[in-house]
Amino acid sequence: MRIFLSCQQATRQHPVPAYHFWETYLKAGILEAGHHWTEAKAVDWAEGLVYSDESELKAWRDRTWSQAIDEIRRQHQAQPIDLFLSYLFPKQVEPSAIAEIQALGIPCVNFYCDNVRDFNRVPNVFYPFDLHWVPEFKALTFYQKASLNHLYAPMPVWIPPAQRVTDHLEQYGISFIGSRDSQRAHLLAQVVQAGVELEIRGAGWQAKSSNSQAVQTHPKVQTLENQWKFIRSQGIIPWIRKIQEKSLRDPPAELFTAALRHQPNSAEYIDIIQQSLIVLGINRYPSYHYPFTQPNTYSRMRDIEAPMMGACYLTEWTEGLDHLYDLGEEIETYKTAEEMIEKIRMLQRDAEKRQQIRRRGQQRVLSDHTIAKSLEKICTALNLR
Image: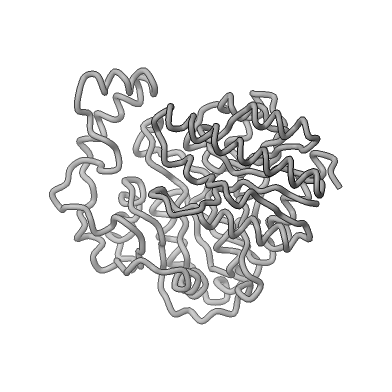
């Protein structure tokens, strides 16, 4: 199968959160599955993430999709394209361009990984796609309610074969890698205060003042106009929660001092995931749509990536994880800080259990949750070769 790929490729660096790994994972995963990928090399898809002004976005969409369609037509005439596969945000989508691709006889599939966090319904611009790749179990109801063709498949992760081993030396401790936000800080503060020695790596953990009383990850309410805009877009209850959370005391930076480590580069990241005694996952996130003490959760990329690397993985329980793994055998999960502490101490004592999780978790993800398996599901759903 020949796949035209649009997954945030860029021709230059952009000031937006990390996006390069999507290209790496998808291209390698497609090749490993025995398929072929192609692209429009001159098109900068990630540039569309930069713009917030609608006129600038429209100019980018007009320019970008015109280039992409021309390239698709040229390549399709020379050698047929079987599938258009994209990872596009709503603001990047041009429905008329999707229709042009479909008119060539090429089905269009879009992957999106933050449905739960970003939406409460499927955006209208997503409707034209022939199929939607949905990695979050909780988001399936969005697509069901919209009567859209969709499939549930994990985050697309690819790890080089040489890294698919489990006999790792445990040279690091109990590791969490990720940027600081209010939910992560409050959760890990409870764990540190219980005497658990963590190793924390990521942006923002050293930036908090001990005198800070506001949850710093959310913008301040500055004017009546801004408040009214927020209410119109988010609703009255999230606005009330936003006001209430301003009085929350953020854990002081000093609490995490002993746990902080430098941010890892790519090679160090792999070593830490593989060689830590335990790797922690956190699936909650800050949102005014939920009470601060009852945050929403959804499964993240690390729920696939860490087991694929052979980690001893302990992650936050969320709906759908039991569809991916045999919980307690292939990965471990927790629902509260107290349960996280209990599971950490259990795994610290039991080297055999840690090795079992490394081995069984990796076997499961490599047999059931690869990009190749997801492409099989897509081919079946669209009746492709």
